[in-house]
Length: 79
Image (cartoon, rainbow, N blue to C red):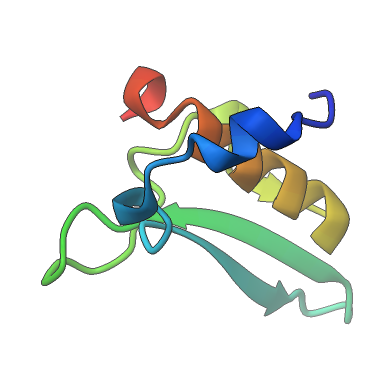
């Protein structure tokens, strides 16, 4: 995943911004895990069922943020 250009970031549809979320969890050993979840609509609960396995979880916030940004840019392709 490369860093997107400013034009690509400006072309992200604003209605998709609230649909990709990053959930922070701690393991029983105290390690941080970041899970990316998708919210289908306004009244639905966020779930990770629709998120591709390659992007579901990351060990660092920076990696989770990059994966979530990649999903936002390619929202129509994945969802």
